[in-house]
Length: 455
Ligand SMILES: *Cc1c(COP(=O)(O)O)cnc(C)c1O
Image 1 (tube, rainbow, N blue to C red):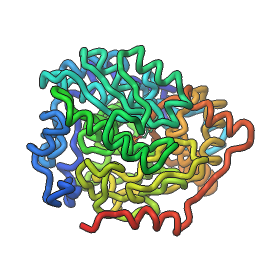
Image 2: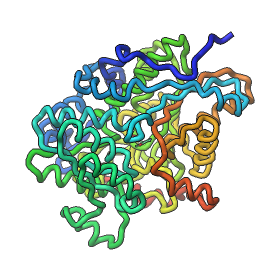
Image 3: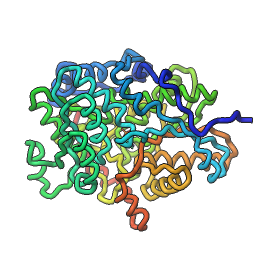
Image 4: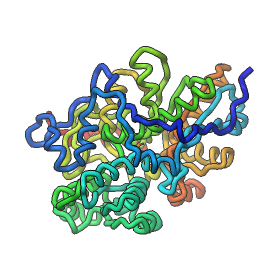
């Protein structure tokens, strides 16, 4: 008999992690270094320091320390919305009629509506500590921009957000949330930067992309005294901060005396998944335990399942360092009907290496199937999930249904990264029955690969 597991397991505030876990320390094959796009030599701390805060550069390059202290100022902020609950999805299990035990770690319980606040507050803290005036960034769907605006408001930093134009126009309320927290929001591409003007001249009427907004944000950071650029995903430092998700999950499972068998997360740039799996992956790397890890990505932006493992540009303007990662090419833009987020062309170098070493699996799912799962989850578990998170829900449900076939009582954990209140245009398409799927052809992908740098 299974012991009585509560619907929600919260840690005490005092049980919240005091250190982040840096999975790279336990990796035999380390992720490849960032390269200077001009010299093709590994980026030095000095070179990175032009773009990023000093302490974050140290974290970016640190592949030896398994644990890094979480400063008290950051923990104090975490305490306003963490520890986040580990939820047993009893109602979903019942409806699926599965012997599987489904848990999710819910990161949507803060105003930004996603896990991104975990890293935003850390990055703002280090910028403040360095005496900077402000930071610049890009945002796509808007969760990262919102999280960063909140973090900057808390520490009294200026925050300049370049928001992908199509989102800026589709999600006016996202923009107002950011402005309420004091950020300035510019639709990208814009006339305010060289790279923005260049992109607009080459592609008049473009609705923008993440890669293009990154280039603009970096240009402004590098050209403004007292500013640095911050990024909400992909980088090692972001995965490090997000390890708080996995550490809390692991501690909560230990309290319950339960061990997950399968851990599932959606993967855009890889930060929530990297953070969720980090301490479990550490055990696997050290040979202490075994788990299955599954990254879920959109079929319309399939960087792990159909990308190349190669050095690539992180942005359209090619101003950022080169990163070795699973990538579709920095020129890749998902088809116009894609609504579910997770649209970055590449994947975190740490997750890319773990995937290449076969320590993690990846699957891609079509968006109509994702929204079916989202709708089912909303109706049964009550939470309106973000489309991004719903990729993980889809595969958690699929795995639970497989258990129904085989009779296996697997324990499944998935990351519920956020809520979907600002994604109603996408939900509306689904509800109206007009959402379609587009899976890029090999020819579509070949165009993106053709733009990979020859390194
Ligand atoms: C940004 C975001 C993601 C994807 O980003 P990762 O860095 O891959 O985690 C997933 N879910 C939500 C709700 C997001 O806001």
